[in-house]
Amino acid sequence: MSARLLSLRIRRARVAVNVVAGKQPLLCRQCLWYGGLQLKLGRDISQDVAHKPWSRALEQSRRFHDSRPSIPPDRSTSAIVPTDYRKPTTGLLSYLPDSWVPYAELTRLDKPAGTYYLFFPCLFSTLMAASYTHAPPLAVLETSMLFLTGAFIMRGAGCTINDLWDKNLDPYVARTRLRPIARRAITPFKALTFTGFQLLSGLLLLLQFPTSCLFYGIPSLLLVATYPLAKRVTHYPQFVLGLAFSWGAFMGFPALGVDLLSDPTAAKAVMALYSSCISWTVLYDMIYAHMDIKDDAKVGIKSIALRHAADTKAVLSGLAVVQTGLLVAAGWMIGASPVFFISTTASTVATLGLMIWKVKLKEVSNCWWWFKYGAWFTGGGVSLGLLTEYGTQVSHKEAVTQTPPSALEELVLGYRTGMWPAAFTTWSASSKKT
Image 1 (cartoon, rainbow, N blue to C red):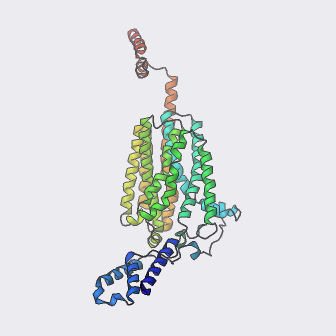
Image 2: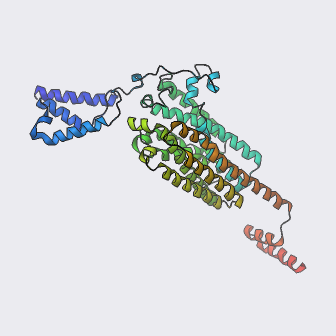
């Protein structure tokens, strides 16, 4: 083996080791081949007429790398350490000790919109199940408060997991470069330990629900952990986020004692509600993704906002139609009254239509405003409609309880319960009297 060929192989081995260790960005195959061939021949083959195909490959490689972000070879967080961070002087974080602030920022304590978005599918499911089962108001209130606490804990855990995955990307995005791990206020090991405490707290809270909720709740952790990876391989990571954030739609019915495996009507309603919440998640997170669309393109993060930048509002409108239609389907499956369809459908159409019409996708502050308050506009409207439906169902049940059933109603009830002979005898006797 010649010394030149040996040197070439050593150089390639070093490149491979550096790429695996994260010390050198991965180059395309043409660049590595051209670099090795040039070293082997000892001259620049791009000027050699006999090697025009390789010259063309070199030019394609150069254009490819010129279009990539100008990120230093060392992608570790030590490459960029922000020095312009200042502890918040207003809001809740300003009252916390300095050592607590990074952990509070890690859970987005000062930005609760994500907690609301995670909570609303749980609330939708709880109120829908309450109307379906005529659950007592105190049980509905207690279940809703437990879900709110769980949404706060699990949203914080999800944010911590996301920052751990993105620790080498956040320093290069304007909106995320001051996050605790990105600015090295917290080490990855401490963040991982903190995640363990968060997940343990979530498990202890989940144990307060009926046992069946464990089987529905635990699988969602897989989606929470894999969402940050989705934006590296697909332009539709918002769909994966929707699968995770909408999981609460499964939880309300079993929390109020409904077994989805033995009740096909409830199971169909839950699937429609879950799909509706997924559409809603993709919709609002598409608006959220527009805040980072320029930095995402530079760093190489994929999103639906980048994929459909030219027709975003058309996609948003389609998602709104799907969300509303599936919500109506869920109400129809559980036999909801006209109150549900009028109040819930009207509020959903009005709030989503207003947001899609008014949002200015090229203004970061405007996208953040609609993302922040859209949770209350749409989520609050749907919740109010479901609460009105629940109140109507409870009032109707009380009225039916106080009014003795007619002979015909007893006959129908007897047929459903298998006691129809006795019910038919009673009905015949009452008919003869009249």
